[in-house]
Length: 166
Image 1 (cartoon, one colour):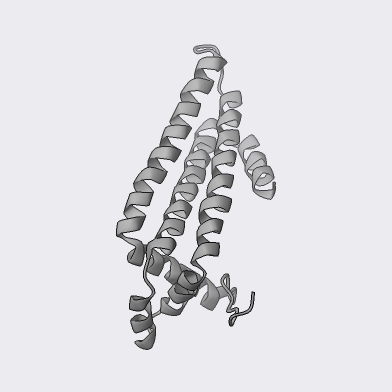
Image 2 (cartoon, rainbow, N blue to C red):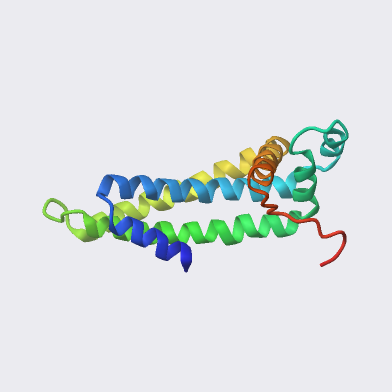
């Protein structure tokens, strides 16, 4: 609800081109999130233990991601991915309402933009899943480096240690 309200308020106060760019960003976030979820589910933990022993930045976060693969995958694929899908539909509707319907009817604009959003989302996720499976180690490592940076810069640990506790 918060993401929907934020995106709707931002989209209401922007021009059509900016709203379209925001729509593309929302779709991109959904695709990347889906890639991370698949990569975490497909990656192996062993190379990251070797990296952690060599004190490579992000290796410990990669291990934490992989130890929590089920939760991370569910969050990335189901929560973020689905929210982005829903919000992109709302963003598309907002863009349609902003467009003047003097040249083309609103029904045709709706069909075209819905098809465009769906094809980018479905196609992007299909391509992203394939990449995530074959490049899972790299994607997990890059994600872990971002999380490590956030932790070091802001003191925010997005995947806290549970030490075996639920």
